[in-house]
Image 1 (cartoon, rainbow, N blue to C red):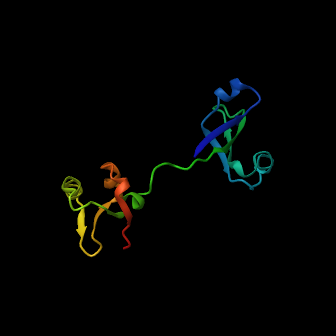
Image 2 (image 1 turned 135 degrees about the vertical axis):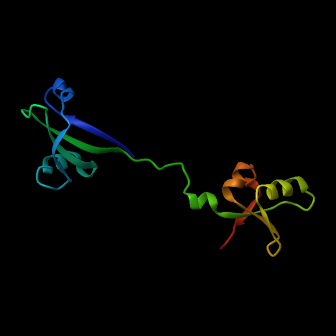
Length: 134
C-alpha cells in the first residue's frame, strides 16, 4: 500500500515552511474532515492541522490512499506446507537430493514429503503430487 501526503496550501513556498507541530489529527467523518471526505471519499485516511513555527499559519494536510496492490510474498504457512513428491525407484539421485534436503519417505502413501519452499528451491515443482493433509 502506498500512502501519499498531499499538502493543500495556497503557496508552494508555504508548504516548504511547514512546521512539524500537529495540533489536530482527525479520522474521516469527524467534524473538520467533511469537506475533504466529500472530495476524496473512501480514499481519505486522515486530516491533520499543523501550525508553522511562529504559530501564525495553519496548514491542512490530508492523507489519502492512492494505490493498493497484492504482495507477491507468500505467507509463512504457505511456504512451509508439506507436499508429496514423486521420485521413481530408479531415480536414486533425485531421492538423495530430497533426503539431503530433509525429506522423509512416507511408506503408507509411497511418496516423499518435503516443505514446499524446499521443493521450489530444488526446482522440483513438477514432481509435486499433492499437499499433505495434516
